[in-house]
Length: 302
Image (cartoon, rainbow, N blue to C red; front, side, top):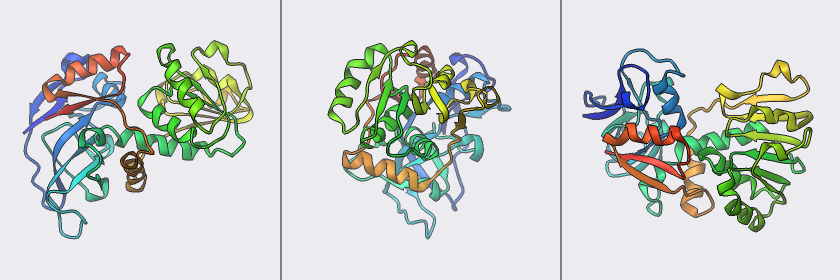
């Protein structure tokens, strides 16, 4: 069976399609993978920023069709599902032709939602839900979202703009006009910024950083919160004693993933633009994502 991985960390060129054993555990849900999204955590793993030992398989997100379901799982052969595999903790990677996983990791995908779009939702969507939960926003909190154009940021933005609270966005200059339109059409009042330099100190009750701009901790008022999803570019709490610095550590949650998929299927949630590539182009996908400028999600199709 084909799966994406690497033998030793390095640049995108170390990523290859490997021949690995077929999954053979009858107590797990066996899924034929329709698509597996490429995420920044895959790049961090491949580069060695997140240490691994020996040959490592990649991939956190998948959507596909159930081939075999254990008794009592609630699934049956032919069901459409999405899942987040969290390989760093579970040892199960998603970028493969077939994946066997705990049924508790998977949720049903409604017929109205394309499987390749569903494949792009799990990690980004669940991270967004858990980040907002950690931010613990009050109705009157003034919020700055950093990186609304990104995978996680777009999910956070969609929920913030439905909140009706004061919300500012920091985005790349090329995305400013589109986000200004979305902000104007929303219930929220706010401004779109394109440079951190335009943001004054002590301006916000909460800054949610999905793009790795730790200097914006200075934009938080005394007693406010700085919530980040980027562990490698987070402010040091000891250096900012007047700010509550919080780091999201995403966890598998069936309930949160069900929320994300249901919102997407109903039209209330984010439907990312998806570009598909074959498994053999995984290294190319890493190089493009690392170079920046990718809009939407790159999804590998076995």
